[in-house]
Length: 255
Image (cartoon, rainbow, N blue to C red; front, side):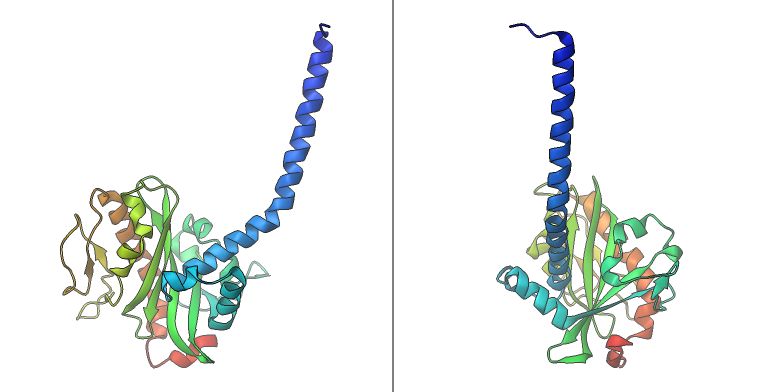
């Protein structure tokens, strides 16, 4: 039987409202689960700067959470290297700082999280410092976590992530092979100038003898340039904090 236009329109409206409510309800139910998954992924990225990827992959989620709680402490600093505990009357923590949102602000107005990897069994002894970094790749944002040894010069490890770099090209910054290239490199030159570590154009050369260079990504020069800018700028932003906490100040894990 042919239905009237009014019936069809009414039915369509009711169906749209019902489906909208169902989708909204589903989103609300899934939100806590999604948040926990995002928090776990962030912890894995942070730990990935100081622990081998295969070790993290072998851990269950609860093991990762426990390991993180036992070995990572954190603080928030400003560009002057001063610790910040409150902003606009609200308490701030490193875990709640959105580095991506902060990136839209002027460097002097940003808050900078610092994650401190503690020696096993001694929460007062620092093993390394982990700094979030953020920037732009070819197609979208890139980010990562850079771990420095207590001399604040030698790279302990690094992790990179991206929102939309080209698979097989720029997206290779997430590969263990690329990230391993940064280990034991130095961010200061012999004169004490902060020079960062620069990914070179092209791929296939040996830079093991150069403390400030790593092999590049074939076909992904723009992504590599983005990584270089990201590292240099954020190291400059953290420079004041690094100068205050060089080796000899490892007792400052919780100061």
